[in-house]
View 1 (tube, rainbow, N blue to C red):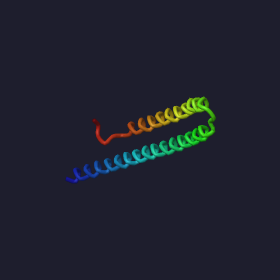
View 2: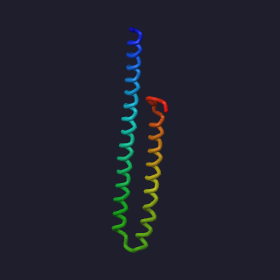
View 3: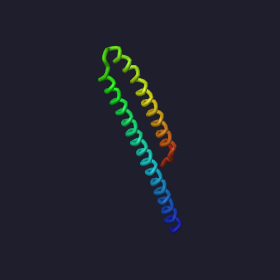
View 4: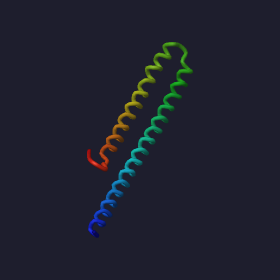
Length: 102
């Protein structure tokens, strides 16, 4: 009987340790996502305000067209950077230990 109680206690402790590890990793990954979203939002706001200032100073339709073309590049770079960082975070999260195997 004592052996069974010890086994149950050991298993419960192992499960608690694993649960602690999983919740810690989940919190770390969520924090990374929040930081990524904040940084991306800050970059987008900066680029958007710069674009708005430039558009306000445009004198003719040609200027507007050239500004739109120039503005597309930084937006594409921001989107690409976001996607790459997001993928890294998700890959890291997927490599976390699992409670049970599928």
